[in-house]
Amino acid sequence: VSIPSTIHDVIMARVDHLPNGAREILRIGSAIEREFDHKVLEKVALLPERELLSHLSILKDAELLYDRGIYPHSTYIFKHALTREVVYDSILTRNKIQVHEKIGNALEALYRDKIGEHYIALITHYMAGENFRKVADYSRLASRKAEASLSLHEATNYAKSWTSALERLPLTDELQEEIIDARTSLGFYLFRMSNMAEAKEWIDPI
Image 1: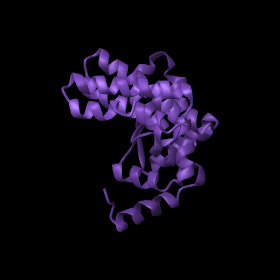
Image 2: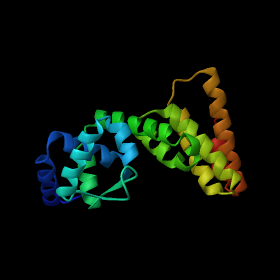
Image 3: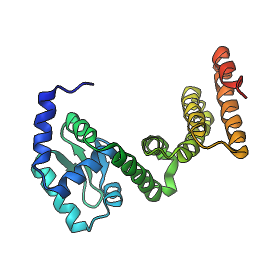
Image 4: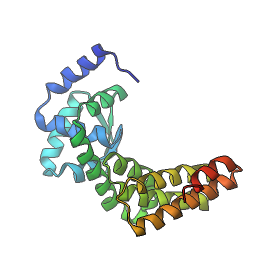
């Protein structure tokens, strides 16, 4: 969605008046999601707790964020979706790649025991962080999970992500075998949905 320049300028004027630390926290939050957990933010920001809370207090007083839940299990929400979009767009590309990688690592560390509930977020952040190895790994797991629950449409989408991520990695004999596995799985899902023509397109290269 194209944001009118006047709205963009108003939002950025408010953000630019923030202290540097609070502005950085707002940027990290915008990369996580419109609503994000305190624990994830803490793991990515790597700030002393008192300093982090001080920055969050500034953002809440400025009515850019509001919180819910009881600390330290709080979640923070951008008051307006447009604010989040404008702040996210202001992050330099190289910094976006780094922060998304950190978010993916934080999710892995925090939710190791229930990682299956976070496949979508992990794929999203590692894709934005250009960590295609992890995109492939989590897309494979997500496709298998969707297949087990007979959600073939989801399994197909994850298998496409799995294949695409693998084919962006440096080619080796081992990787070639993984690509064959991914394309075979994708073709099988499409075959089961009676989409023969597309299944053939994905299988033909192997």
